[in-house]
Amino acid sequence: KQEVTQIPAALSVPEGENLVLNCSFTDSAIYNLQWFRQDPGKGLTSLLLIQSSQREQTSGRLNASLDKSSGRSTLYIAASQPGDSATYLCAVHTSGTYKYIFGTGTRLKVLA
Amino acid sequence: GAVVSQHPSRVICKSGTSVKIECRSLDFQATTMFWYRQFPKQSLMLMATSNEGSKATYEQGVEKDKFLINHASLTLSTLTVTSAHPEDSSFYICSASRGGGGAKNIQYFGAGTRLSVL
Image (tube, rainbow over all chains, first blue to last red):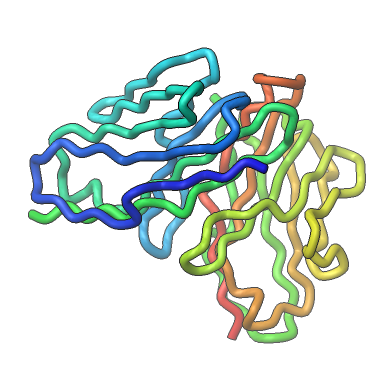
């Protein structure tokens, strides 16, 4: 049974800092992994999708990496801004299944 | 491409009423659509899977008579929460997949609907 864990659960950083969010999963047989952003009381925004054959994906200040063999993905945020404050979720699509398994998220607060 | 629209984004209703949430794939045909639910401080959990023209398949513990799912076309699925009660207050999100098997089964997610039942 796939389990997805995100560490840390919460993180506060000063503006401008580079930071790394971690996601680990127990079953390395996956189709893909997605990183999402969820703002308080609001909806979900897909940030990056990494296919199982890929090692990383980049979008602007965001870079997501995937190490399937070790069951890990990281989301790197460069030069963080207060507007980056949100909860970041990772979700894994396990091979042979039809559903994504979500982590419980990392609540990020970037202080001005 | 691959945009999924969900409506409404937020709904507040009285206990005992029914609420319908729509999920549309705007620029692709979605063979399969999925409905997830998120309770406070918990992760999103799959509720049900629907294939166009077929009855939905519900995950264990999800009441199919309470959460009615209709996937009448390749671009629209609806979730109706019948006789809603305060414990149904949650964040509901849909996703859509083109199908095709294996790694092609990427799910594209809507933004979600926050339901508050008074």
